[in-house]
Image 1: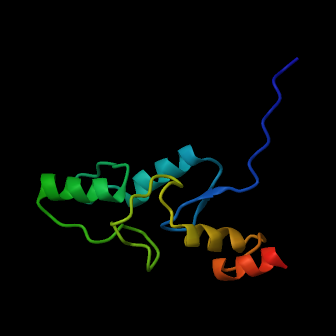
Image 2: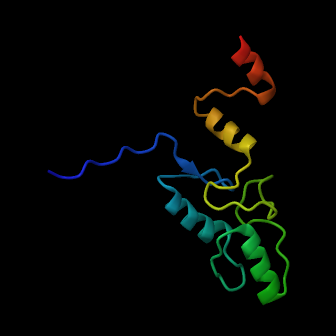
Length: 115
């Protein structure tokens, strides 16, 4: 008898920087390294935006102010995002709220729970 296949997680992982969805976090990390954390000078793939920023500064003596190929408002290199880790909770809630889950601001959540 063969092994049973695990069911796919109902919530797909997605890229904070461009909203593209992926089947698993390993592929998401590969995408982030290739599209968002790649040095524009030597094409080295880094793990985070901060790592890319430090690499470019130390090796190439240049400054990087924005994450490449990111949506407007999400270009900041200040956040340490690796895969799905580090995504702000409000962005996570907004993203999954669009897919049919309960999308209620925290300030109203206590009112709903108390009712």
